[in-house]
Image (cartoon, rainbow, N blue to C red):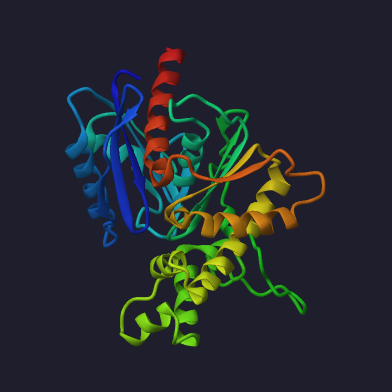
Length: 323
């Protein structure tokens, strides 16, 4: 890993870009995501690479919140960013002049989390759940990324965790579906919970913010909960318990060594982790989960950009081995 590679973590609200050299990740360049057009977004990505690259840049890895056909680098479908059906590997590669490798953002974050701070592989079977604008997922099995038949494996955000089907299964209304982990536990869901708590609890910190006409989002709820506000704590804990159901689903399906929570939502720390763990363990099938650790991302919010850089480095190594 002597040559430089660049990792890009492309999210629905922001983009982080950083260079990896000699097993050290540089400082991230962060910008709000250009969502107005495909061309504008691609130009932004290329411009960010140009700002952090050196003369010996060897490759770029990029994680996107989308289903990706990894072999070609084509974005198959995309809900939160304007890249659906875009051959991103080709068009960004032409713009930056080096090989580009494209994968799902949570998948590359999972790859990062399977490695320790020295970038040694330490978990061979790991599930990553990223909590941000949406809810993503990544799977590492046997020390390698598992992508599935179409490249879209790990979409835990679209598993259903709470759906009333006493009468009949509701007609699908588009993604995210009602009752899905993304609909109930993404960052937007915490925003809605926080707003509802603010309206019902006018004497709380969130209620005072609402009365003053100030924003009431998940960020404010986490901050107020960390300061001991009871109403805010209720909102965050309810959100975290929903995440716990998603964790239980992952453990029941894969029985991994680790389930890792990342993305911006992981900044809630123990306010997220403790309720999520409690609920997850109560919903795990007897006999499963005894050897599963549920933790926050060791690489924090930089797991995505580090994983994207590792993707580029690993793919370059694989190409050299084949040649």
